[in-house]
Image 1 (spheres, rainbow, N blue to C red):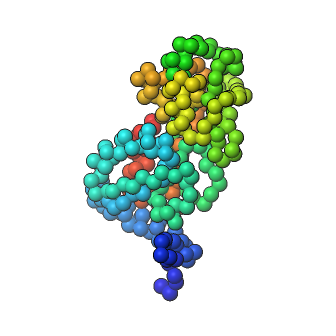
Image 2 (image 1 turned 90 degrees about the horizontal axis):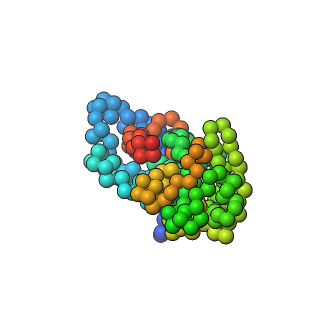
Image 3 (image 1 turned 135 degrees about the vertical axis):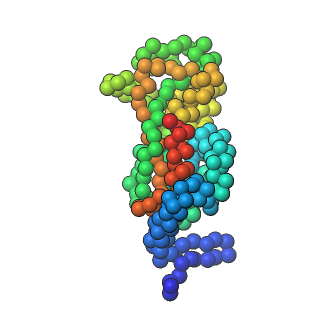
Length: 253
């Protein structure tokens, strides 16, 4: 082609600017060929190859990893690699097919797909409830309760709490003696009885069903948080990415 595609060193290979432009042009065409094969064969057996997925650690650990076996059973010719990252990063440079993240996406050149909205639940461990009691209204949390906060990586500030019941929304300003910067630590401290946390329903629902957590203020749980997928093709989604995203939608529904 008369252009340099890769930069090679002793330890790494990366795309050149020309290589990146070539990839971004060719990837949608390859996805179209793959989709045509699936459509012509009308069979999931054509979903094959390697699928590289970027997720954050909590989603990977609590949601995806325990359920990947069933997905692989459905697609025996597909290999999956889960890449745990704090950020979406550069999907092309890292060879990632798709990334999945909770939260409102920052502006970028990536294609974004809204997969689901999940509720935000206010929870505490049974041992905490036994000591501090059940709050009857959000305002009661400001009186003698220990709220556990998580820092927003985008702003560096704690995520602000709010409570929603239908159209009624109550912003809740709280301070805390305990703050973490990842959801796994927030879950762990909440389960230990250290305080009250606001958790995504996808992470809390099984723990509530197992009576390891108590859902507080259930009438004030209409706030939702979005789950997005990100990929680098602006035109077509490959068959392997499409079936994976359909599976993720089912997991969080």
